[in-house]
Image (cartoon, rainbow, N blue to C red):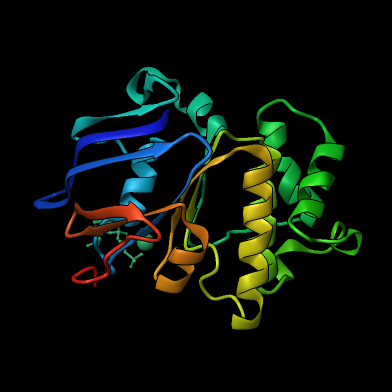
Length: 226
Ligand SMILES: Nc1ncnc2c1ncn2[C@@H]1O[C@H](COP(=O)(O)OP(=O)(O)OP(=O)(O)O)[C@@H](O)[C@H]1O
Ligand SMILES: [Mg+2]
C-alpha cells in the first residue's frame, strides 16, 4: 500500500517552475532513494511533503489524507524532515533531542536517550554542547531528534553529505536499522549513486523538476540520470 502519493505536483518560485508535474509513490515501510542533479528540485519536493512549502497544483496524499487537510504541526509529527544542514540549538545534545518532543507536549527523557543510543551516540554525548560537535556527530543528533518523534515517515536530505567517508557506511547501517526496525517509510535524497543502490528498495531520479525514472535497485537504469 502507498504511504506517500505525489500526483502532478507543481511548484514555482517567482518565474521559475522548480517542480513541473512530479508523480511518485512510496510504499509503506519502503526506503526510496531520490537522486538527480543539483537544482533539480529534490529538497523542494521534500519540503512540500511536510508543508514547509505549499504546492501550486497537484496533490500530495500521506497515509490516505490529502496533506492540505492536515494541520501542518500534526503532519510534521508524522512526516519528519531531516534537512541538508543539521542545525543544532544552543544547549546539550540531550536538550537538542528533547526540544521537539517538548514542543509536542512529550516530556519523556527516556525516549530521547533511547533515540540517541539508536543513533549510536553513547551516554558521554548527552551533556556535551551540541553546537561544538563534529559534522558527522551533528548528523547523528539530527537523526536521533527525528527518530525520537516516532514518525511514520522520514524525509532524509543527504544524510551523509559532509560525513567522513570512513563513517558513511556506518551511518547508512544505523539509519537502515532504525527505520527498518520501526517500519518507517523513507525518502532518502543522495548524490551518491552507490549509496542510492545500497539503501533504496527502489530508486527514483528527478531532473528539471520531473521524475525521469523509477525502478527497483536491481533493474534501475542510470543512463541520463545525471
Ligand atoms: N525559496 C526559494 N526561492 C527561490 N528559489 C528557490 C528556493 N528554493 C529553491 N529554489 C530554487 O529551486 C531550484 C531547486 O532547488 P532544490 O534545493 O530543490 O534543488 P536540489 O535538487 O535539492 O539541489 P541540491 O542537490 O543542490 O541540493 C534551484 O534552482 C533553487 O535555486
Ligand atoms: Mg537539495
